[in-house]
Amino acid sequence: MKKKYEKSEINDLWNTYCTMLGHQYREEKYSKTKYRNAHLEKYEGRTRGSYEAFMMNISTARDKWGLGILKGYKPSMPNYNKYIDELCKKHGLDPLPGDLSHREHGGKLINESGTTTVEHYLKEDAA
Image (tube, rainbow, N blue to C red; front, side):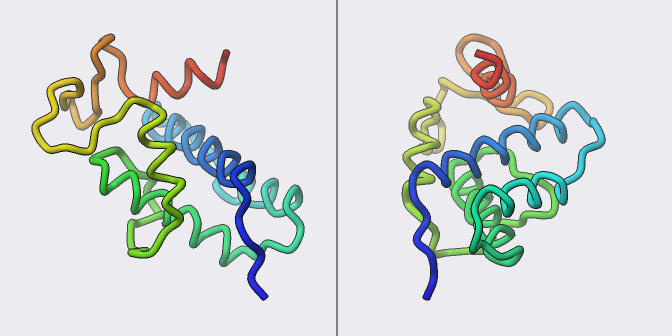
């Protein structure tokens, strides 16, 4: 029987995704395997495949919202946990095309405060 994802685990996966995305945007070396293994140790009963699939779920939601995605976790999961959409909304992101509160700059979304969405996540992580 599949183990249900609780919101706390989804939040951990989201934070891990955003941390890795920060590394990617800063062009820093990092190990996806290290992050995956840490998650699998914390949440016993999860498999490598379930972790990888959930990261693709996050990419699917982020792609739907017009946000950057991690290389290696391509959006391909049409039926994903809709709580991920709530996380996108929580971070003040509007999925509507033509929304002027965010604009593209060099392939990165810029918000009203002039910071990239990734910088916004990194500031939240530091707080």
